Length: 184
Image 1: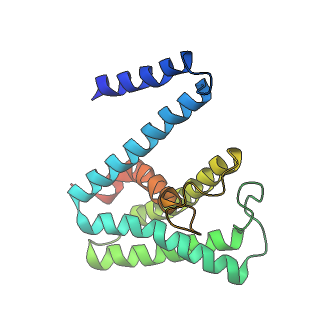
Image 2: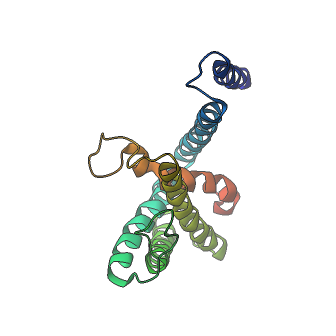
Image 3: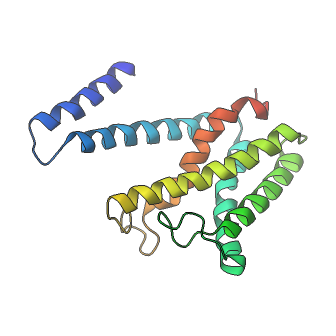
C-alpha cells in the first residue's frame, strides 16, 4: 500500500517534467486530492465495519448541519460567514445547522446506540463545525480555480463532490474523535 502510494506520488510529480500543460501545482493538487479522498473514504469503510448505527449517525451530522444551515440562513441570516469564499452562507445559518445537528444526532445516539455522555456531544459539536469547514474549503477550491461546479452530473447542485464535501470532512473529524465514541 505504501509502495503504491509512493509510486503514484512519484509518477504524478514526474509527469510535470514532460508536459508543459501539467505543472507542479497540478501534481500537488492531484496528490492532495488523492490523499484526502482516500483517507476519508477509508474512514467511512472503517466506521461502517465497526457499527452501522454509528455510521448513519455520523453521516447524519453533515446532512443535518447542511440542511438546517440552509433553512436557518434563509430565515434568520443577516451576517455573512465568509463572504469572499461562499457569499450565501451566514453566521446564523451556521449556528442553526450546528445546534439542530448536535441536538438530533445526540438524541439518535442516546436512543439508538448507547447512553449519551458529554464527550460524545462535544464530538458532535466539533464534527458539525468540521463539516461546515469542509464545505467552505471545497467552495474555496472552486473559487480559486474559477469553477462554478465540480461537475454537471447533478445539474444545479454543483456535482457529486459538492454533495460529499461535508461528509468527507466529517469522516476526517471522526478519525480525530474516534475514541470518544467507545465503539470497540
